[in-house]
Amino acid sequence: MIKDAKYDMSQARLEELREELIYIQTVREKEVAEQLKEARSFGDLSENSEYEEAKTEQGKIHSRKAELNDLIENANIVEATTDTTKVGMGSKITVQEIELKNKKKLRIGDPEVYQIVGSQDAEPGRNKISDASPFGSALLGHAVGDKVEVDSPSGKILFELMKIELAD
Image (cartoon, rainbow, N blue to C red; front, top):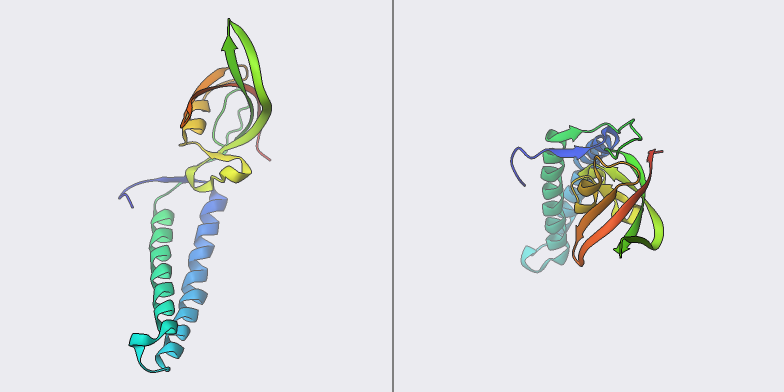
C-alpha cells in the first residue's frame, strides 16, 4: 500500500469499513484462535491440515486488518454534489455512446445510467463508477449535451452526456 495515499469514499463507506474491522477484531480473530487451539490438540502439526488452514485464515485476517486500518486512517470523505448542471462526485448521469460520421451524430446502443463515486465506493457491476477511473474522470465537470471522449482498452469511445441528476 502506498504511504500517505488518500482514499476517496463516502461517510457511509467509512462506517462499513469500521464495522468490518470491529467484527474482525471481536469475532473472527477469536474464531480462528479457537480453530488453531483445536487443531493443535490433534497432535503432530507437520501433517495437520486443520492447523494449516487455520494458520492461512489467520494470515488473511491479519492482512485484511492492516488493509482496513490503512483505508480508515487515510480516508478522504467526499460529499455528494448538489449541482445538477455539471458532473460531480455522486452525480447520477445518463450517457449514450455516439459516433460522428460526416458531421452527423449516430447513436449507438441504449442510454446507460451511472453514478460517479469515490474509489472505495465503486461497484462497476451496479454502475457505480469511480471518479478516478478513465470513464469517471473524463466525465467530471461536464454538462448535459457535452461530448466526452473516454480512453478504453479497445480505443477511444465518444459519449454524449444526456442527463445529470442527484443520486438517490
